[in-house]
Image 1 (cartoon, rainbow, N blue to C red):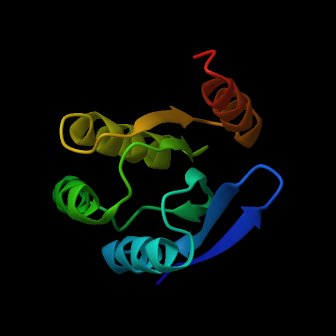
Image 2: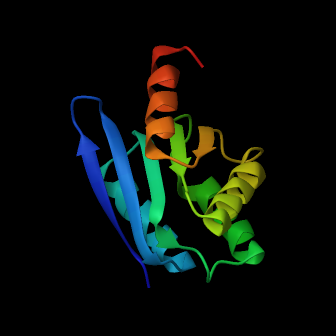
Length: 127
């Protein structure tokens, strides 16, 4: 099982979610539930750089898209960060599949710096 932690940047009203360890589907669903309860509707940067998705399959991605469509906040900016090749590919697959069912302004990046720059641009209406 993996783990996650939330960090709120109160000055920017921005939620950072960081995942750690070898992730399972349950880690994602628990994180979404807890995040919605504690920080509803905030723009988010989701960081997978310290996590492994070796146990996540294409079928799991399809299930996560269905779950996210029902439970994730709509109409927010969400930057997803994954540095590893496997993780980046799976996050891109999630993003692609969720594009038609989950109305979020999402993008996938390999570095936190790129994600933060994109987030700032989106929030200023530049992107």
